Length: 441
Image (cartoon, rainbow, N blue to C red; front, side, top):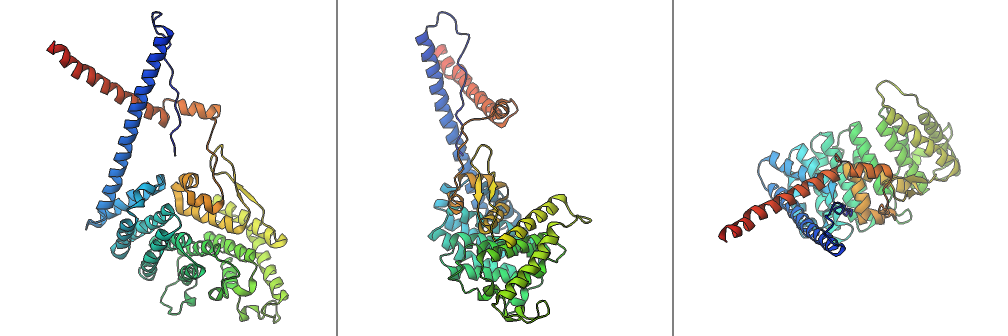
């Protein structure tokens, strides 16, 4: 983000012999020198940052796993803290190649970090041919990762990466659905043609459902055949009875999204419509839809009023209650209650008018982590996704000004460091070059 203009006070105790013209000249010179040194200082910071990034990239070639892990961690933190367009512009292919190498040969920690790095790489590159190349090259290796090992963190990171790079890089519905199928086989291992996948942990299961729903938001309801998702409503409905709250929340969000798409027949099987409520119902009949809605209404109502049990956190419980209250209202009325999200202080609110938008924001917020505010503020890809560009802050409140000018604030510390450096450089000039000239005289 751009630096704020800082006003500095002019000298207030100039001797009377200094005229107004001299005063203005002195102030002008001071501003000129500060601007020059400020630009030089900024250039030094940019060069230093570039050096650090290049050093992390070089470290990915090292044989020691811990060295590569530290390098990946440094790159992920860099991706989180700023938009690295210049860094990835000419190096995305090299970065991708090294990230994939880490996925193929690294430890679980290295694979997790490399998966996040690939996701951030795609978000930074933005939609287009480069993002498509990232997706086509990485998905097969990420898929293989899901088939091997049992580390939940590694699998969750790989799943989220598949979702992100497919969201950004897929050219058509078929490519998106291939990625969705990979993820669905994690959610429901029995749906796989070759059942070699084990039952996922709750953490992996919830990550997979969130990722699958995230990609479902991009699928055109009239162009997709939805064949692979037949039976998904019944399956997800059963997950609402699971003990793990994160699984219930993920399943509820997915079901709400399916209701919004309003193509129930595409998400059911013939045997799903049989023996519901003690009677055999037609596969695509309105009666079946009514029974289905009735069941989900009961589940949503119960979960929206659930009492906190042993070991449950207040935040998770409130999130569940809030979600299923909104789902309950949506199923009953067929209308989504618009949400207004505060992204940054003193900025316009982000308006969410559908479950698809809500699902996208929730997933991106989880993936971006500490980089959420930075990317929502400055990443043009996310601005395009949500048709939203936050207004730049114009005026600081009295409280914010007090924090900004506090000697303990980051800005004040940075200003002090700069002035100290500038003072040292001035002293070096005075006692060095000028003193030498005086001695020669």
